[in-house]
Image 1 (cartoon, rainbow, N blue to C red):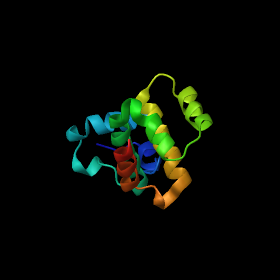
Image 2 (tube, one colour):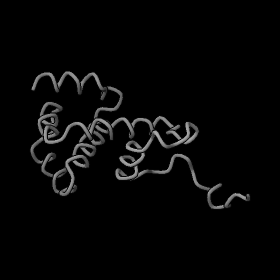
Image 3 (spheres, rainbow, N blue to C red):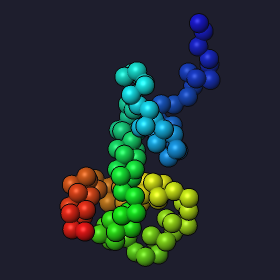
Image 4 (cartoon, rainbow, N blue to C red):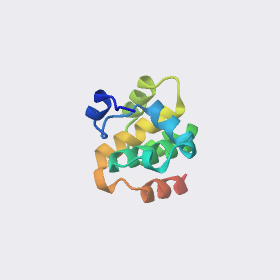
Length: 115
């Protein structure tokens, strides 16, 4: 079987949409280990998708604990009107982008305990 030249040129670091991450997370048990996320960015996005899936309505409370303004929270809502999970995921993406290496699961866990 010959490989497709277009597949060979595709970069493994390509951006994944939230939907593809959520689907990959949900059906990851079907994928062979060689196809699991390899880059740190992919692994981080997959972890954020898992956390976002569990936040539900509480993502706005977490956003306030993480010092997001009401305007920033509303902007996330407007950009992702049809999915709480997408809203949660975008909050986490913005938080990681804003706080960098200090954005850790320990911070999320501590903020969730305060609620």
